Image 1 (cartoon, rainbow, N blue to C red):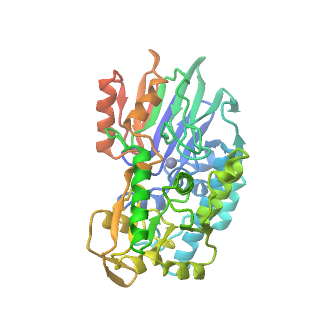
Image 2: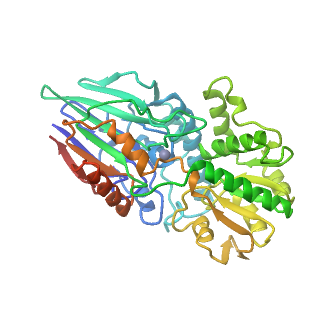
Image 3: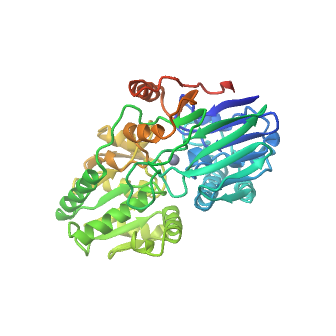
Amino acid sequence: MVKIKFCGAAGTVTGSNYLVTTDTCSFVVDCGMFQGPDVEHLNLEPLSYDASKVDFVLLTHAHIDHSGMLPKLYVNGFRGPIFATNNSIRISTELLLDSAKIQELNFKTGVFYGKYTQLKAIVYNTKDAENTIMLFKPVDFEEEFSPANGVKIKYHIAGHILGAASIEVKIMDNGVEKSIFFSGDIGRKESHIIPSFDLDFKATPDYVLTESLYGGERHPEREDSVEEMVRIINETVERNGSVYIPCFAVQRTQELLNDFKRAKEKGTLAEELDVWLDSPLAQRVTRIYFSALDSTASNLFDFPGLHYIKKYKESQKISRKGGQVIMAGSGMADGGRIMEHLSFALENPKHSVVFVGFQAEGTLGRQLTEGEKEVTIGSKTLKVRAKIHHLKGFSAHGDSGDYIDWINRLRSDKLKKVFLIHAEPDRALAYQKELAEVGVTNTEIPTIQEELVLE
Ligand SMILES: [Zn+2]
């Protein structure tokens, strides 16, 4: 008998975690962090399964909502291999150590866990993260391997971020092979810096678990958002203001650097324009991108006027000049060096702040993009006079059109059920409707902690 339990990212976007149990073994796909006001406390609750009995883990990609609770498995006794692509291992290593450091710092200084709990707690420390990293085992795309008797696994390119995979699992169940396809996060069909999922790929799984985050939605064209960004930068610099971009460390930063480079080559951005990357984590991840992509890759992210800021003190100094672009973490302005920059910039109408991704509820990014006129950073109350922009074309996730192209490759008479995951309920319902319109009617929106037998 094969069973699947939806332990996270079911009826919600984050906390990706699925437990598969067969007659001979049990394994977990992803073990991500829950993020957001309604679910963050779940990180502190006990796992709903015995981690010490899990034989192995399959990681789709490095993003923290897919990898961020791997050390929690370790803390709870898991000692098996964690299979992931080489680039996912390298990026996860950075993200897990960063996450452990933040938890340790908050705990030491008496700050509550996360952003929404009222608990002084720590899920894992640096040592736990380091021990977890030791369990990683690299796998190659398109190379089948068998981590347990009767189980075959293959990783396929998903696009989305460097190293990201969709995972095909084949399990022998009483002499019959059953296959499950886990989408991970699905990228967009076009990307300037990493390969997208293969449109010509074909497989015939029995079950599919698919991301539905942007169900029923279509993103603006990416290049239109790039043009808009260039226009905002030029207008702001002309009035001697600066452009502040709260930035996600993985993929978004590298894509933007590539956009700026292309704009400078085209002459739409002035060659002498200074662009500062003020995020140590984004710098480390950019170096991983540099070395992971082919030999011309260094040219993808490098251009005249680009500077990496290392020390916090330097960061303070550059904020005070006008006529430049400053990229700093975090992407939702809920921590990191961008907070200092914003507390300086928000009250000055010369400056612009450009958000380039999803802004979760409860974040400063959400407040600003919703047009709040007064916000607080630390103990400071600030009148928002800077120009606030929210450009939605930069998403690293596919939209509904991409999802349908992705799933069309997996359709056959054999397909028994498509589970819609990684989405708020309204988006999952919207995607369910769209799928029905193209003839995929055997869909289900699982609930968290639901366990099903895969017939
Ligand atoms: Zn992701």
